[in-house]
Image 1 (cartoon, rainbow, N blue to C red):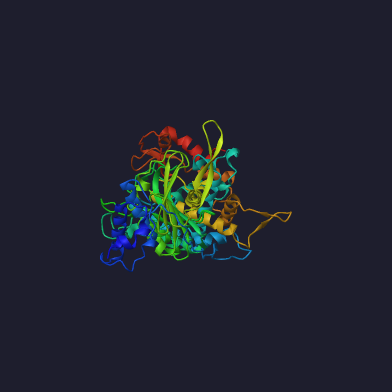
Image 2: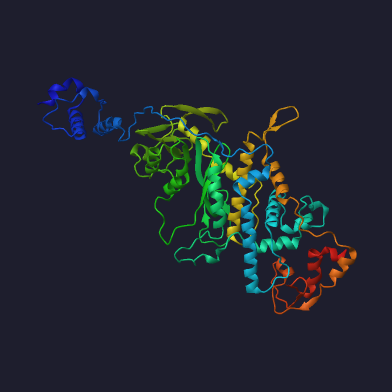
Length: 569
């Protein structure tokens, strides 16, 4: 039959080549015989009249998008399922629970026993190699707990160096650390502090080698607790965080756009409503010489898998976003929104080749329930989303060169993305305000203290949102709990009744003790302890027998005046 006769009224006003192209496309889609169109109602198809051949081709492509298999500029609403989770702490502690109880939900006290055990093991191992250390004595879980409390205090009252916490100058005594522990003991704990037995870890390059063996024991305990302690809000964000470290490390990263540019990269999933960190993953670099393909996609899947099925909305940046990832998340009942690089596979040319110049200009294309948006502000921003109605618009205020404020039209997806992408940044801000990370030569210590900081911040959020721990003022109003007061109370509770410092010695005892500090000839030349502080390298053979350090003759008195001022009183 002659299709043009039967459907002529449906194509009235269209060029013949448009009609032919439409009929061919329809036949291809329905896999029909071109000689039999009797069962096809062509009046159901929409076509746009056009003056140019190129535009006709675009129109034909747009029409097939009603099935959701191709990109179209004809935006339509789609159903966004309601979030079916309940954001809250999963463990409700009684009203008499205090800060350390919330901390122990994430950092259990059993870890203190483990750390004490590993610290003692490492100290013994080092002394087997280098000889007996007369200043070392085995530590305990109680002392390790107090040691963590001391680190919290040092994060609140920050001094240029550790020695200032033990200064005799009254201006530098507000911390009270020198009342709880001696400087020598703290030095020894810093020296031998260890959290895992990495002696069983295969050498680098050997099968089974674990780059994170130094902290694996702690990490394996903490991660499941972070994941299960809090049910996140509908919106969650995934991004990278940096742990500052400038020493030598095979997987140290350089991220120029981050405030902390060099260090250990950690992928994190955090709640933008409060900064709670549910999951993190340390990036240990590529295996061998081959970079991992689809790394960003894999990270998002790993960090979000435990919350699939609840219709969460995941926000991420252009490092992670791809069409394939968002399709996979949608199949697992999870929505997503993120900025996207224009060279990502599958984006329509209308978006990738957009030449927007005017502030507020926007292009949006839709494919099923997925929307690609290009919006021009000072530059063009490109986003991909499955969780925002593309027909919704809003306005943002922008200041002009002459100082005037104007309203600029903006797709709603931009405003939502800006609002909820900051979960990891919020967690970083909480962590960095009173960070307990101390300067160290070992990279793994930075990672360990990062984990402790995350546990402290998360514990603070758990207590802050606990219905049994609402703070009331004298007037009956509720007052918000602050992280500072949480950390101060936690430090007190960790220190408890620990007093590692001996009672004050009598004058006679101090004088007797001073008799043992005499310059002698040591067994071999070593770096002068006092000179090394001034960044001067000298290797005398003289030293102090009691302190077991090498010292130049001229450095003997100043060294002991600093380390043992009681001998000179």
